[in-house]
Image 1 (cartoon, one colour):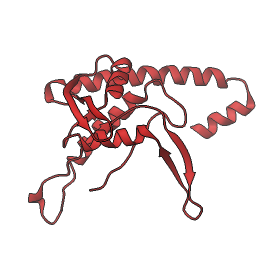
Image 2 (tube, helix red, strand yellow):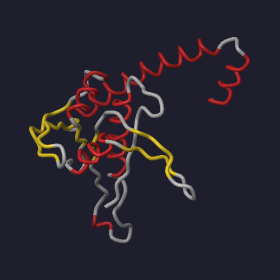
Image 3 (cartoon, one colour):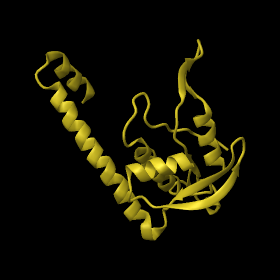
Length: 177
């Protein structure tokens, strides 16, 4: 199957990057559930994806001359891949580090321990699912979204205060809009 990687906090670290990635993952799972596996054979059902999230440092570089690509390297990339491969369809599997960051950034988010899983190349790790059951889905989403909204509001206020009065910064605002 195909795998895609989404990255938060690059090139600049964001105080809510784990929340942003979690919200993206929840939206991606929901969107996939509305796509038929085959329009010719609707009985095959809808696309199901699994998600893994890990947080940590990476090395970034542009690779290639003819077809340059922005690439990320390091143990964080490998661990994120292992979190995905050890997840289940429709689930978001969190490493211990991602779980801690998410709980720090959005204390209202609900996670459930999966116990110790034997992760290839890592050994036993306690992994967590981000709860998405019908009873807590909206509560979890609301906690994540309110955290994100608060942080965006602070960032916007800071951005506008930094940019008032300077012609060069006014030009930056026009380009960023």
